[in-house]
Image 1 (tube, one colour):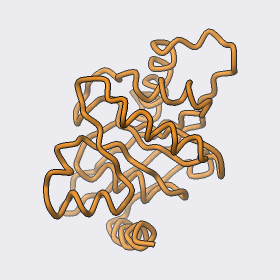
Image 2 (image 1 turned 30 degrees about the vertical axis):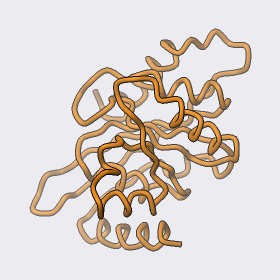
Image 3 (image 1 turned 120 degrees about the horizontal axis):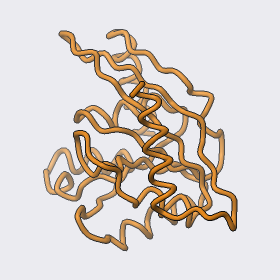
Length: 183
């Protein structure tokens, strides 16, 4: 309930600031999905979660959960902690369980804000769960208020038995986000 209230609130706010969302129809209506996005600001999880028509469970750096108010808030929105820089099997199991129940996982595969190479965690989850990856690209038109442009790409699928190595899946996903950004 809290998730949908917050989503509605931010949808109103972003509409007032003139945000644009393209490609909402590309998100599968049901079944497991791994959503990946570039990461440019602290707004990104809110922007992606508001742009999509399904609830998104985000993996968030564990340091955020240590902050008293923010930790409770993001936990209430369905985020769960991931320890960056090492294999976090607890977070991976949580993500795979959510995917097994048909949910949407949100991941910023750059591992933080900025232009970094994508890490392979999102590919690992998608391949193991046999879930499509939906690429999302965010741009922030810096004005007095944040004005976002969100482009949601078509799902990327890897057939069972294909030669989809994690490196290949990661490269394809990274290329899809770059195309959406117009790079």
